[in-house]
Length: 635
Image (cartoon, rainbow, N blue to C red; front, top):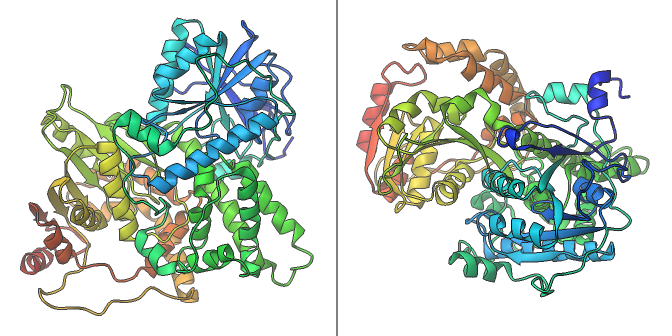
């Protein structure tokens, strides 16, 4: 036993077990409860199945787990006593991709699915690829192949989660069980909300290997082997709409302005999709601090700008984590192996030479913690103010609240989108939600990437990145016109998104907004971003971050001078909790490296729609009267 783990916890999920089963009954649907777990050990196949099979067949449904190695579901299905295992992937226009992804992203996904098919064929099996809606196809496939159970990964993303629950209800009507599996980096069944508690109490587990073989199956005549269909054509044919028209651009977790500023124009970013190519590219990336011999290594060096250490990893490999080509456990092991293998010959330069490996280790921890945290959003205190959901944006987890009126909202009425300020989170607006839904509005409160319970992936966090997030949230989640209200920096981000999507924003409300102003007809010198890391910024930002961490309750009371009761325990807890997430300090530090933002009044000119501006007179953080006057004069 790991000496960090109590005997009780160790028995639930011993060290060395990467995956777990979650078998849910009808009474447990939607509640996230776990009734039975079984796991494979140290890459070996489990010797028992979760329940004795009542038929010789099992349907293995792949979604965002496009690999054969380190795949607990594949191991358990292969070693579960079934005579046949039927692997299926469904190109589902509702869930398989966001509407904001480009044609190049769709081509990448098509290549990753084709490679999964190749891997399964090497193991003596195959992959059936269908096009359509999973809630129609999966129950029919289970009936067609006389399956007693469907094995699939547990999901956090709200669309997949709702889809899986709907399918589970259909399956139970035919006495077919659904077994949900989950893969964790740490030897823990149910992650605590504190990363410090998790990392102090549980070991990191090694990845599992692929099974030696997978029980085969006989294709039905209705499932002709037509290969992997064109994802682009599948989207057009099923939903009547295609990708967002970005064409050759990738949808990556990095703002477009940073990509344009940092990329070597001679390097055409080509993100690998197959398992072998991914491993080769990752090994090349890990060596990038010690070499710039290849275009990928030069790109990695150019992308890791001050205030955004590890950004290049998320541009190059975030898709592989989000779609399961790489598991966090596999990524962590590859990075740690690189460090140990290069220690002897690079002892003097190890601190710098291992930088890319450290960035990869951090990315594995950040992704794994956020994903497991998002499994249980419906159990948080925030959920009492609306549905607390998870959305995957450019491969990064973000959370949001959705609240609706008791009767169906008028479809012609815009939704209300509330955007929080610096250091806060979506539920900062919790006391405004009920009043707006009572007036008949659908209300959405997203948490910006890097804050609250959203993932804190390495990136240069800029208003442009948050503006792109907000625009995509409107297009992919809300999917109807909105009135946007933003507080503090959330006001500036709302203005930025409105200037880019004026046709979707029917009104803009700026609440004590941030954003610089310039007199009409004048220009101001733009401050370029820092080219080198600053020791002063590193030290001062760390000191400020530490002070803020320890002073959250008292600081909140100061900024709520008229309603101190609103600075309650929930608000303080969520801000304090988020500050301990992996990557939280790097998000905070990145703002010290920001270039000069576009003037607020010029964004409002571009938007040219209805704008309401109000300032709280007793706001202790600024001179509200002067600020309001300045905005009126500049716009």
